[in-house]
Length: 139
Image 1 (cartoon, rainbow, N blue to C red):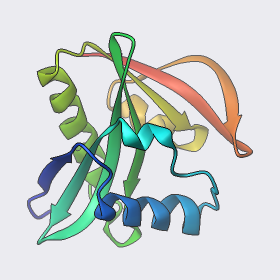
Image 2 (image 1 turned 90 degrees about the horizontal axis):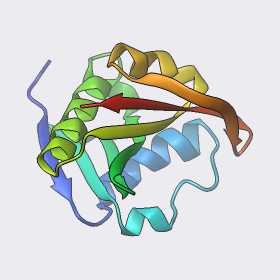
Image 3 (image 1 turned 90 degrees about the vertical axis):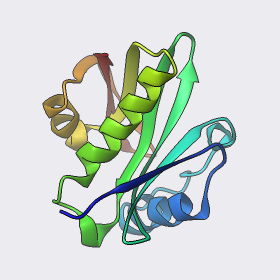
């Protein structure tokens, strides 16, 4: 796999917006993809050869951090980019002094996060009819 150029933004970049729209709105049918948390989040975008291919956002929450809106462009999936964007987010959180990370994941994606060391906590809930669960990791 080619080098992934990680860039960190304090505001929602258009590249992140495009990836999230492709994945969550166009593919998965979510209507409420963008919210006020985007205004306070740190956004991470991974690029290959200058093309945006993966993204996530980081939110500080009461002494811990939440990683969310993790998405990889369809044509770049199954190449380990999801793991690489999560690792980049964890490194950023560590530099910010974070120790506990939460991820509110679609239930079908939970095994992906578990392979990265996240542990399920709590009950299943629903966002726009899609089952989600909370996972946590201490770094």
